[in-house]
Amino acid sequence: MATRKSCEALKKTKDAIVGIKRKLRPIVERLNDDTADQPSISPGMRAQAQATVALSLGMMRFMAARLRGLDQGRKPDDALRQDLNKMRKLLAEIKSKNEKQAMEDAAAKRAAAATTTTSTATSNVEADAASDEPDRKKRRVSPKRSKRGKR
Image (tube, rainbow, N blue to C red; front, side, top):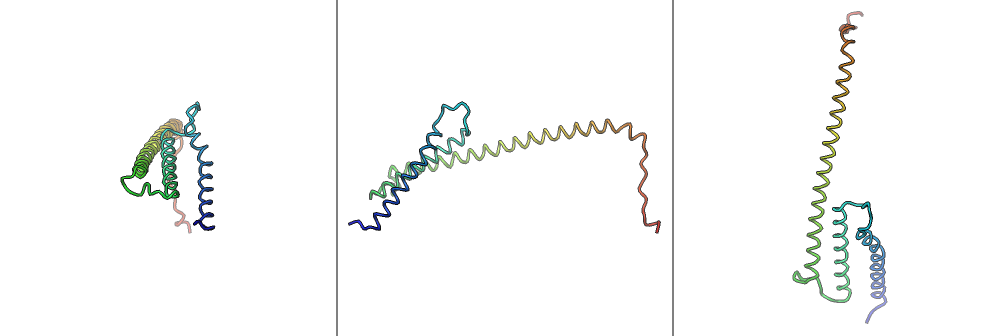
């Protein structure tokens, strides 16, 4: 026999799942929208987001089975558990590839910025040196005298 407290907990769980579904639907639709001319996210980030959504849906399947009183996904040889493990492994691989790609992109940007800065600085120094050569011959630089001796 269900008690009032257990029914309230079940209603809260159901409302939470409906809320997740309502918030997840636009994300899934945006991720699967291949008609856009200018994609808003990179392919690696899109793959990571899709894997995250797939894992979330798998976890929801697990929770739904548990709420129905089924013992799905608890044993290592259950199909649901194997799916969840595959999704976690895939998500970890995608994340590592994205991180590696981000580091390579950052290194390439730093190298390009350093090359640009070095070439700009070199050309500025060469221009200054060329303009200063006639002035150096005309003016004499005298060493600074110490003020200690004048006391």
